[in-house]
Length: 73
Image 1: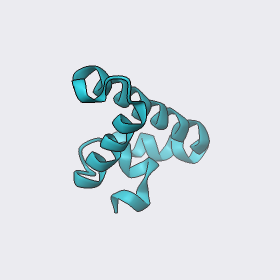
Image 2: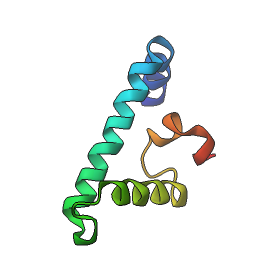
Image 3: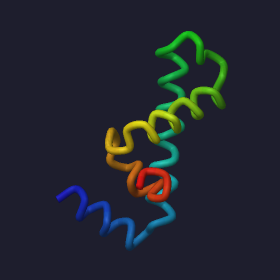
Protein backbone atom coordinates (compact mmCIF):
# COMPACT_ATOMS: atom_id res chain seq x y z
CA UNK A 1 0.00 0.00 0.00
CA UNK A 2 2.83 2.45 0.80
CA UNK A 3 4.42 1.96 -2.59
CA UNK A 4 1.09 2.72 -4.24
CA UNK A 5 0.79 5.93 -2.23
CA UNK A 6 4.31 7.01 -3.12
CA UNK A 7 3.68 6.31 -6.78
CA UNK A 8 0.43 8.29 -6.63
CA UNK A 9 1.95 11.33 -4.95
CA UNK A 10 5.01 11.08 -7.16
CA UNK A 11 2.73 11.22 -10.16
CA UNK A 12 0.77 14.16 -8.79
CA UNK A 13 3.67 16.24 -7.47
CA UNK A 14 6.96 14.57 -8.26
CA UNK A 15 9.10 17.65 -7.63
CA UNK A 16 7.80 18.23 -4.13
CA UNK A 17 8.12 14.56 -3.22
CA UNK A 18 11.68 14.42 -4.51
CA UNK A 19 12.62 17.54 -2.54
CA UNK A 20 11.13 16.08 0.62
CA UNK A 21 13.18 12.90 0.21
CA UNK A 22 16.35 14.91 -0.41
CA UNK A 23 15.66 16.84 2.79
CA UNK A 24 15.34 13.52 4.56
CA UNK A 25 18.81 12.60 3.28
CA UNK A 26 20.16 15.90 4.62
CA UNK A 27 18.59 15.10 7.97
CA UNK A 28 20.29 11.70 7.87
CA UNK A 29 23.60 13.47 7.25
CA UNK A 30 23.01 15.62 10.32
CA UNK A 31 22.27 12.50 12.32
CA UNK A 32 25.49 10.87 11.10
CA UNK A 33 27.38 14.00 12.15
CA UNK A 34 26.07 13.66 15.71
CA UNK A 35 26.33 9.88 15.87
CA UNK A 36 29.93 9.46 14.71
CA UNK A 37 32.73 11.67 16.01
CA UNK A 38 34.76 11.55 12.80
CA UNK A 39 31.94 13.32 10.91
CA UNK A 40 31.39 16.17 13.38
CA UNK A 41 31.59 19.43 11.48
CA UNK A 42 31.98 17.65 8.12
CA UNK A 43 28.63 17.78 6.35
CA UNK A 44 30.08 16.92 2.96
CA UNK A 45 31.90 13.89 4.35
CA UNK A 46 28.73 12.72 6.11
CA UNK A 47 26.68 13.07 2.91
CA UNK A 48 29.35 11.13 1.01
CA UNK A 49 29.20 8.38 3.63
CA UNK A 50 25.42 8.16 3.24
CA UNK A 51 25.79 7.92 -0.54
CA UNK A 52 28.32 5.09 -0.18
CA UNK A 53 25.99 3.35 2.24
CA UNK A 54 23.14 3.75 -0.24
CA UNK A 55 25.23 2.13 -2.97
CA UNK A 56 26.18 -0.71 -0.63
CA UNK A 57 22.62 -1.47 0.57
CA UNK A 58 20.09 0.32 -1.66
CA UNK A 59 17.04 -1.36 -0.16
CA UNK A 60 17.80 -0.13 3.37
CA UNK A 61 15.54 2.93 3.01
CA UNK A 62 12.57 2.81 0.68
CA UNK A 63 12.80 6.37 -0.60
CA UNK A 64 16.24 5.79 -2.15
CA UNK A 65 14.67 3.75 -4.95
CA UNK A 66 12.46 6.69 -5.90
CA UNK A 67 14.93 9.54 -5.57
CA UNK A 68 18.02 7.82 -7.01
CA UNK A 69 16.73 5.10 -9.36
CA UNK A 70 19.92 4.99 -11.47
CA UNK A 71 22.22 4.60 -8.49
CA UNK A 72 20.19 1.95 -6.70
CA UNK A 73 19.42 -0.16 -9.75
